[in-house]
Image 1 (cartoon, rainbow, N blue to C red):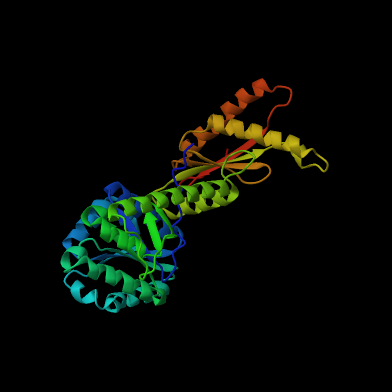
Image 2 (tube, rainbow, N blue to C red):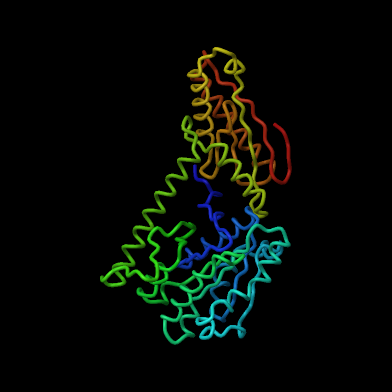
Length: 359
């Protein structure tokens, strides 16, 4: 089974956060855009994407612009494109970043009035590096922003295309951002280096690659911890916390229609006082085996409590839900032919996100 909905959570961003996202593939940029939009929908955020040049607009259209979620987010006022081309003098702003930040106080105020939890300001700054005299100016801009951002009413995401900037510049960027992103993940920069410190006497390329490798290892460890926290130890399926999070995600994201099948282990004796819990666990493990045999790769199965499972299925019509119920019934029938002395009883019912029906 593959979870087609879950992503690493970006919802930990708060006003005053300063995040650096480095990418070197359009696929990574699109992945980041998808996760950002989904998190904005689920967690009450609004995204403002700043256009400062034709190159920035082209980058937006290549990645964000081709996503079906983008149009829906714009229509629902969860994503706004702020065109500041011709209004920003970056040579001046690098010396006075407070002027840049002041541009967005009105947006942040409007975001709060609209009931949103957070304004996430996204600025792709790759093109800026070509408009200023030296990369040192851009680094100084980021350093100064980092000092000021903690008092700002929004989170700032600085995006850079690694293919267009030097290794030394990338290393400086990483060293002066307390939060980093890789693909679809956000995490604290545990290698964050204050301005006064120096990182290494080795070549920037070697140091940067070592740094990114360590971050990738850290990201994998975070993923494994997250997976462990979202799993039921008895059955190996996802747990109730995961189910509730995924259900909220799918309800918020309009293009994602889904069906839901609830499965009750229908053995009343397992709740009797003095009943051996090991037998109850055996019933649950058997039920899990049936659901696993009946599931497709894209189905998401969760154990909700001592007797109940839920199956989230992509597809929002009653036919999809009925097909899932029938697969479970077939797998249950096969199972009980092998366990005729102690058959397993499952009670099934379901609904879809568009049309509802009972089974």
